[in-house]
Image (cartoon, rainbow over all chains, first blue to last red; front, side):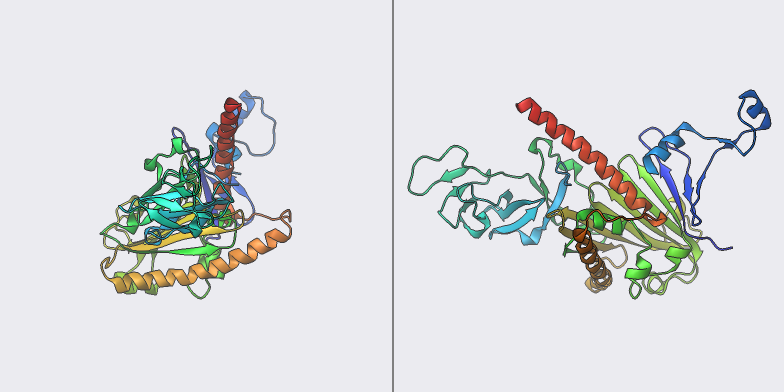
Length: 67
Length: 350
């Protein structure tokens, strides 16, 4: 399948930068993060069901600034 | 919305001479001229007596501008130095004087607080007078708000439609990976096309015999400076990593200056690093881009007309707007910052 039009959003300031966000042609926003393992989910008492990722705080700032 | 504490291009250097030139910048009438030694001057183009444009008058002594209506004279600082028929010069008989700087074959003006006018803050357009580059610049009058031009230049996808017969390419819309980077000083929109055949125009100019790595990098510096860096090198020679060898580069250089909320002075230029001293090449490259830009100007006018009919009409955003949206957010933030400064100064004065 050929590449569809896709936008990568990157945010940076003088000292920090955030991992990329991707706007896809089918309307999704794809974020980069680290998957939460079952052990972590248990240790942090996170709700069951659905996939979870943890993201860098800079990415949250980037989302607020750019989306 | 105008951001005044920034440098803007007011004119090309060849436009400003010993005949007064009138230009409206951010709703303020300005008259430009040169003193006998060639120093450029920018004054408010409105006599404080009866508001006639001083640009209708003439230069009578070195740097002295005489009003066409009743002959009041103003020096290069804006001070009234003579009122015909009376010795007393009324208090307040002066016009505003604006800081100006000549750079990159353009005359730059500072419309805001003169105390903040630092020429080192002028955006870099050195390609326009760099001997290693061939370049030509021009002026377009755009009947639209200045931010519509920002939107346009930060979006690569309109090329496929507005410039269908000139520089357009549907691949830009359907199959492109675009990177929009919000930096501390602006926005950069980047697209790389790796290991693909060079387009015919590039083959002709650059003599490529194999595939190339191409780039299109749009650099936005607020409020309204957009520089496009485009080029190609033989594939695999390291351009994506910053090593550009054996290829060609061009710069499309844009500087928009608001005239009013609905009209814009659009200064632009095109520079190339191949055959930089061949005037025919410079002209050919320039004309190709100018044709495309005139297509944009038609769109701007139509767009602004519709906005004028109903400024509150709903609009939508699409992914391709990402660069323009980031630019608008920066402008909004800078405007809020500038208004805070203005209000603080006003409060202090009271």
